[in-house]
Length: 66
Image 1 (cartoon, rainbow, N blue to C red):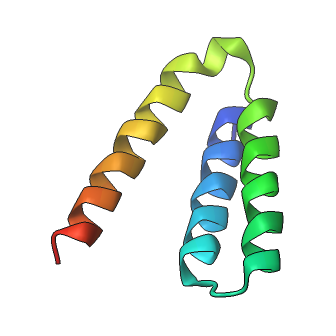
Image 2 (image 1 turned 90 degrees about the vertical axis):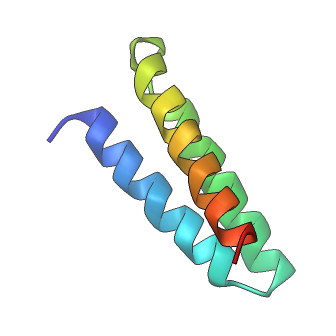
């Protein structure tokens, strides 16, 4: 498994935990963890980051349309 795949998996898990949480402090910690994981991707992983953002936006749009 590559660093990109690991980071993408971690970011997905962090996002899911963030969306389920109602505690501000927990959300803040998860947000910082998400950013830290995002920044751990190297510049060569730019395509993967963009794909994750597109996927995240699609998920958010689907959640709001319900």
